Image (tube, rainbow, N blue to C red; front, side):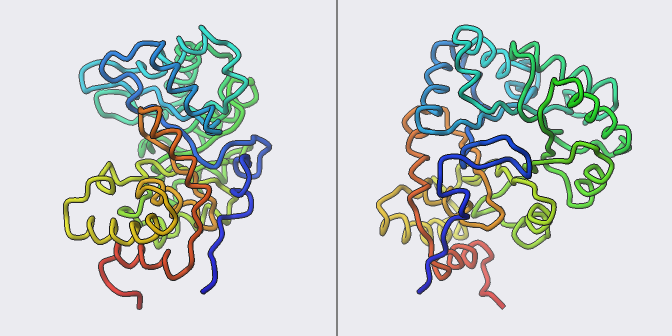
Length: 308
């Protein structure tokens, strides 16, 4: 039975975003819930250190993180900015990514004026001069990609942003924007998990490999349903993961991260936990090895029907 190894670049602590020169860790830590429950800057700093100490140098946030439907827009960036202001040396230890383009309560906005303001506002909240990666959070159907591309090329030229990506874009939206950009995209950030397998069959990951984009998987635990499965499908996928997790002495969640990482596109799971121990534990995903039989067993459980 042949082993299905992780992509070669994921066998070491560092890899590169797209075809660019920015080196990142094969796992990322996300800050969607960083500002929850009035977390202090001191407690937030402990989580940042937990990620960095575990070798997770790729940190992902967004301007809308912290928004609860009424307020809190920008709170996660503000909190991280306080951490960075208190310990300026941390900035050099991380690859910092943020996102923008959602204007609460709901509209998506990629107009030139809004994108420029969103990027400047994120830099101010984070208390930094530039970010390593800036991604459009969700596509604005009313924005022409030519206008969007012009703004993004300008912010890269200005030095405010080192590289560009998209999140939740369709393959055609990604292709259109990338075609018009002078500074090509390096990342795409869709929802991917053992319970959300659309990307494996709808062409998104194939496009990422073709264009040299690094996929960043948000919600890699299926919104927590892999940790606490409820439906028959959830339980079937959990059981398929457990058979590998138990054999290799890791938790199911670690196994779920590694299942994504075994894909040849080089998926980077975004760890959403705000618990220092679980953040550190996630690094064990690098140790897990998959056979094709075991990997496809998870996929079959997720599909709910046998392979054709």
